[in-house]
Image (tube, rainbow, N blue to C red; front, side, top):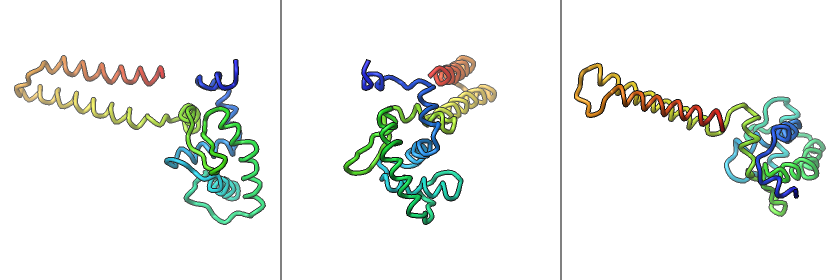
Length: 173
């Protein structure tokens, strides 16, 4: 099986751990998660070098002046090692002529392991909150004996079944 065929599938957990086992690759994933669209490789190198000087989380917004030799070291290691590996694993799409990167097909699968939160978790939580509020509204209307055209118990059961099905889907995905 060729490398291209294998990369069209999802990454194995061991491959994801190998990808994230390096601080600089992990920083690239974190930067791409916080930046919409394309990111310049020079901005990534500057942010990572700044992080290595400060010793805290990587951020493209808070970069201080870094020693030129450290910047060059980071830039070269990104070009020669980290970007090719992330591109090979389809975590990023790297445009070598424009020196930019963007998220690849496997980005979300890898990012899930960086912070333990899936990018769609907020949407899921919002849908659960909406369904729960809807269920409570139906129960409150039934408590006030207001005329409701549907059975409040049945509608509440349906709402909570939707919440459960959504949770089960997220758990299994």
